[in-house]
Length: 91
Image (tube, rainbow, N blue to C red; front, side, top):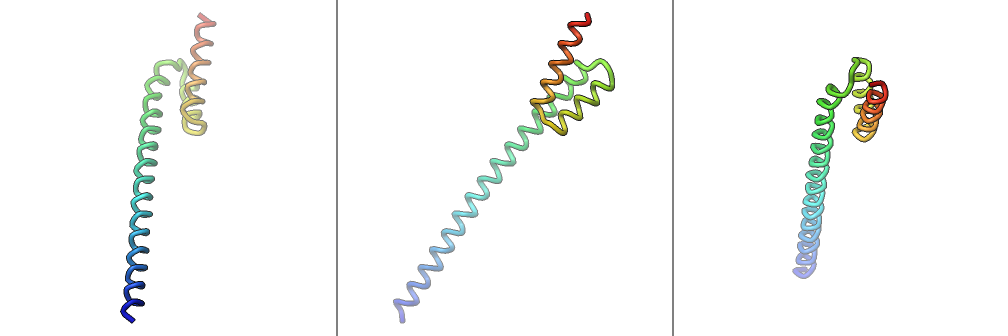
């Protein structure tokens, strides 16, 4: 009887240890994702002054912001490069 109780205690302890390990792994993953999200938001915020500086017309600014929101940073940077190229060609 004592042996059975000891086995049950060890199994419960093992399950708790395993659950704690999984919780720690999930917390680490959450922290990693939060950091990635903060980095992403920071990169997007850095583009807003560039949009204001590069875009001549309000329509271009709106278009750049739409691209930033819906398609992301890389697509917005590509759009801004194309605006700069067009500006250089017309001047």
